[in-house]
Image 1 (cartoon, rainbow, N blue to C red):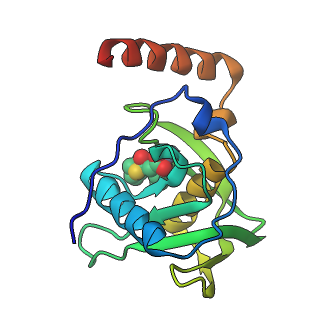
Image 2 (cartoon, protein in one colour):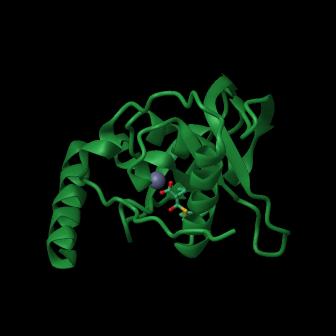
Length: 172
Ligand code: K2U
Ligand code: ZN
């Protein structure tokens, strides 16, 4: 079983602003993509990765927000949706593999219930809290073409976008 590291798109990129379409075919290609995304996430390293970040505008995300001392807990969520969000909020410093070296505080519901399909198309539902809740909301935002910098003020966001354009020019 060979896994392939995928290239992570850097903001600004139209594919990162796209509302992704649902996954319809639960086949070997989907499984391969999920495996590649998990390998790409661990290699980055990151604790989450959404399909549009590797150029696939479909509703699929992977995450593993388990702490360093805990065993890995890779999760694959297909066609995820938030079915409930707590009133109380939580503020966490967020980063994004598509916006390297930028970290800003974002406030989100502290707990969310998410419903999704697994790689066999079977329905799953679970409540997330802590870093898992922050991460799953950050990843589902990616599927709707939303980035964590969209929660910042316009001035800060435009400075970050200018910085990323420069970085992309250097990398090209
Ligand atoms: O989606 C991504 O780009 C990976 C994100 C996921 C994430 C962002 C903010 C908060 C939690 C998860 C990160 O780049 S993964 C690296 C990381 C890990 C912990 C905290 C911040 C960033
Ligand atoms: Zn991100």
